[in-house]
Image 1 (cartoon, rainbow, N blue to C red):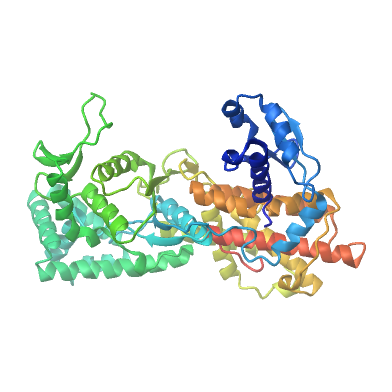
Image 2: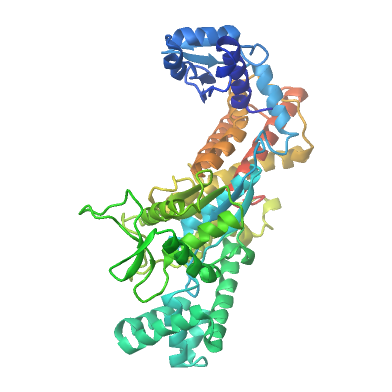
Length: 581
């Protein structure tokens, strides 16, 4: 076990049990990084009220029962009752050496693996993805990767919009203009332009709008072959587009992960019928509604969850309720993470409340909305084109790659680096810069999309971390050995070595924290600290020109451990890593 927090937690639990009885052995040791030492236990503070004693006295008794002499100096008490631990250099060195042989880098496998649904991306079919889809897609993918690495069974779910009014509109417009008309080809070349033309007609031609709504009924009834055929063609065009987009973004979603709104169509009538039978759904202003307690408008009236519209059609709420039932009953989900925009917060709170009222969502199931904030331009407004439209995602990715290539073209290269595939490297840097800029921001907050900052090779950016990995690899190329052949042992004699080694040992704790909180920015912040500490170590501790071979081998091993942590962490974030830059 290499993670200091895990080791210290186990030792403090033993001390709590020995000091206060078995009933206290399961108390949270509350191990945290410390400004007074390496780590501290805050366990004495919450125990003070429970035991009716001063927290410093409790801390002293914990120390009296602690057995940490093999890993730390004598613990001390500070402040109101913090127990401080300063780890021994020898233990840090041995534990860091162990990372080189540990494929999990100190990350524990989940003791009780859960089935976890991660719903993310979820674009509308037959429309090009825009910048608004970026955050859900890459944050959700990072959450899925990290949760899977921790040992849980992850089911990726791309809950695409492939049903409803917009499809009636698109299909009816195709019938109107003819499938062979030049404008129909826009579905392959510029789907947004086709959608906008159909939308204009829908908004300005009442007869067309009525026919489009009738087309939705035919689509949902699945009894009109011509309507079904065109819908399936639209779906296939969109699947091809999504494959290409996800490949460019290095996202793990596949066709098999698409489970759109249409998938639940046959379940909707049962959802409504069951809600009625339970007496939860009532007619209100012509629509069938459920009024979950605790949700009121500004005027104090109860807010409804509409499950059947006045015209007899179903809506997002109906589909989301059917989705919950399916995930619980068929997929046996223990946890579901909805990586969706923050503007849907009230919707999900109310839908979850209805599902719990109906008994479809047990209290033991953890269904949460992982809120996603907006992407802003440098003007502080929502990121849009000059014409006011959403920025197409493809344009964003292309510009990122072009900017990265322009930077690479300015680099003076040694003879051995002049044959590099700069186009491929530019793709890694451009995509990595865009993804990391997003992931390094708390997912529920807005962030400013600033090209100059995100493409920079300095500061907390994707290119900086990518460069850190290529810099370490260059050390091994110059040494004439592969980083995988280094075994150590690692010695910790200099402060910069100690700081870097200690930070590397925290990888597992950070991964576990990201799984629990669904907050990938915590891993980003950790990796930036690792890269910064490696830079300080490299500047202060000669590696290839070390004074003796033993020190050289130790520092090469520390370089290898840092490289493994950085590449593993960036891999969990889905950030590509070029071998050279």
